[in-house]
Structures are given as structure tokens and as C-alpha cells.
Amino acid sequence: MLSAIRKFSSSIFAKIFLLLVAIPFIFWGMGPVFQSGKLNTIAEIGKEKISTQEFIDYVKYNLTNPDSETLDKNLIEKLLSNFIGEKLIALEIETRGINLSDKSLSAIIKNEKIFKKNKKFSRVKYEKFLVRNSLSAVVFENNMLKQVKKEQLFNFIGKGIIPSKFLVNIAHDKVNQKRNIEVINLNDVFEKKLNFSETQIESYFNQNKDTYNEINKSIKFIILNPKNLTGNNEFDDLFFQKIDEIDDLIVEGKNLDFLLNKFNLESTTTITFNELDQNQNSETNINFPSELIKKVFDINEIEPTILIEHNNNYFIIELTKTEIAQRKITDQSVKKEIVSNLKKQTKRKLISEIISKINKNTFKKNDFDKLSKDENVVIKKVRLENRNDDNVLKQELINQIYAFSEKKVIVVADINFLENYLIYIDKIENVSIDLNSEDYEEYFNLSKANMTDDLYNTYNSYLENKYEININYQALDSVKNYF
Image (cartoon, rainbow, N blue to C red; front, side, top):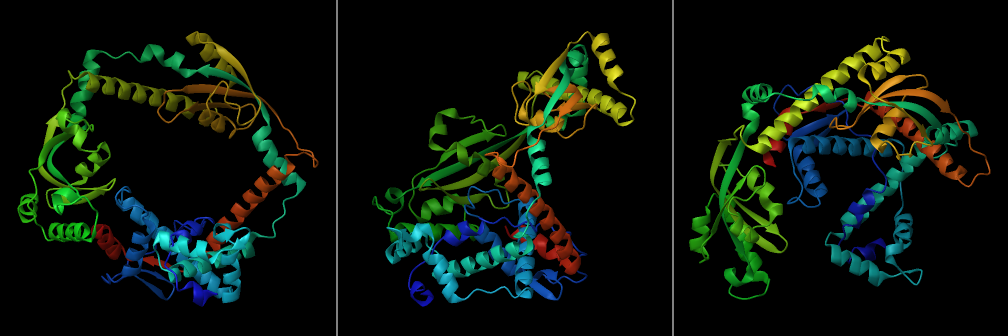
């Protein structure tokens, strides 16, 4: 079977299939930096050396669409963590002697629904699938093999877990317990303290002037299509040969004027964007996709000319000028932003003061009631029927409330401090689930997932202690620079 499969082309199916089982073993603790600059080795796991080129290939393979994905330093570090996680899993698979025969792998492929017609394996569907997705069949088979072995390892670790009714009840109660709470809207308390004078606004602006700089970038660009590049309307081999040639010339440092002359192209369009993604020459904006504006701000003076493919069009873009402009305090958008920041600062400070008192156990229920009376704000009584009851408060705040116990005073706020509440958890009514309930299986599986997750975390710690992991940060920096 496998030898026959290798006659066909390839597929991205393996890549999709690899995502079906999440890798829990990521974000490894970084070991000490190598003492010497061995740039060809990016990491060591025990005695095994991992080549820098292998990691670069991994990064390229895992970027499904490099043009639309921001490949910053944080993403590269995250990919390195995932890469090391996969390496550790592979080592464990080898240590545990997990194996799969060609016959078993053949049976797995034959049983995939996507390759079936009339409930039987269709070689034609398989072949079409591989050809349509353009990866080698060998890569497909190898990744399928790795995935199945990975599933077997995970099953080895946690397959036999069966939660007790007690643990199922805990999982059910965490979601469905009822809570009676008392609520003070802190925005009503803060309202009198959120009026700012012109002097305060001006002072904030002067202290944070650099924050209110904006970058303007001017570019000239041309859209390449078969008509202007080859003289016909077909996306044929000649068109793509010329695209490849242009790409190579840009890498060599040739500018847009050189390319215009060499390929006898028409004149370019000049356009300027500011940092707020607003086109200053709006009449020409129709020719330049808004999705590419971020790409413009990624261009620098060192490599000012780039080639980008977007929606079957190719753009040659060249940065011509970068200007930094100081926004003025008279700008209403600046003033609005300053007032918003001052409000956040003030709210954050006032909330921190209350939280500090709560943590020191000097703000209790009588202080809760006193605040309501002193500030003349209403205490609203609310009953939460379960963790998903967002009729009064939004889900983000409900999740915070359910993290605390009964008879507690807490502060909950959204990430932007737009909604801020002082909460007293008056009463918690625990609930249990009957063994014959139609929802029992759902909470059984939830409890099992929680236990499995805990077990994976324990196994994660075990692996961290079992294998010494060293990262070559010089090589990592070279990879970041490469991309």
C-alpha cells in the first residue's frame, strides 16, 4: 500500500492532522547559553544537538501564510519552544518503544473519511487530494506516522483515567453553582474624580510627548500583472519566471527605477500613509489594498524595496521617505486619548488602593456598606444562576467572581477599566449532578480532561528534569535576523 501511495504527489493534510492533538509540552525553561559561538547548533537536548538549519526549516513549514503572518521575535521564540517540545516527544516515543508497522499505517490512511467514496477507500480521491495540496507523499506519510505515535504516547500517559462521581460533581459544581452577590458600580464612585483640568491635560502631554509622535511613510509602487509584464493576459510560466527574476534582483539590492527600466514597466504611483493607517492621498487609495498598509510600516531604509503577492496581484513597493511628526495637543483625537489615559490611571490607582486594603484584610463587608453610604451609590443585589449567566455582568467579570469563595469582598474589572465593580459574595449554593442525568457524560468528560491536563503538566515537569535543555542564544539571534 505505502509503496503505491508514494507514486502520488503530496498534501497539507499531514500539517492539518498534526494539529488534532495539542502538544502540551511547550515553553521549556531555557538552559544556560553556550560558551562558544556554534551558530550551526541552536539547541542541545541531553547529548543530542539540534541544527539551526533544521529549526529554520521547521519555522518555514509552520508558517501557513508568511505574507499574512507577523514573524516577530516572540513568535520565533514560541516556535522554538514548540520545536523543542516535539523533539522531546519524539525522544519519549523512541524511549518507550512506540512503533507502527506499514500495514497499520496503511489501514489508518484507508479509514480516513476524506479518502472514502461510498464508505470505501478511493485511491482516486486520495490521489486528487495529494495533487491538489502539493506536498510530497513521503512527507505526508512521515507526518501521519509521527502523529499516530504521538497519540499512542498520550494514550499511554493518560488513557486509563476514570474520574470518580465525586470529581464529576466538582466539575459540574464549578460551572453550575449559584451565587448571590452584592454589587457596587465603582464607576459611580469614581465619577467625581475623573474630571481633569486643562492644566492636568497639558502636563500629561508634556511628560509624554514622544507618545504622540506619528510616523508618516511615503512609498511608490506598481502593480504587476500579465498585461504589463509579459504583454498578454495569462498567468503563464513566462509571467512567473519574470516575477522570480524581479524577486532575485530585489534581493540583490536593485531599486524600483532599475526594475521599471529593465522590464519596460509603466510609471509608479506615489502615496503617503500615516501611523494611524490613514491615507493622506485618499484619491489614490483605491489602487492600494488597506491590508498591505501594515507591510508599508515594516519596510526600512536598509531594504527599501519589496515584492508582495496579494490576491493574485504582485506589488513592487519602495519606501521613499520616512517622517516623524509631532501631534499637537490641540488635536481633538490627542486630547481625547490623554483624557482616556488619565481616567485609566486614576481608576487603576483607586482600584489598587481598595485591593491593597482587601489583601491586608482591612476592607470587609462593613467597609463595603460604608462606601455605599458615603459615596451615595446603590448596592445592587444579583443572583448568578451559573458561571455562564451574563445577563447582568459580562462573562469576563463573571469568571473573576467564580474564582473566589463565599463571604469575600473582591474587585472585578475588564482589561480596559471601562467596567469596574466592587463585589461581595454573599452566598454560594453548591449543586450536584445525578448519575442518570443526560448531562452526566459531558461533565464526566470535563472532569477527565481536567485530570488528564494535570497529568500532562506533571509529565511535563518530569521531562524537564529528565532532559537537560540548553539554548544557543547566539544561534537564536541569527535565526531572528535571518527572518
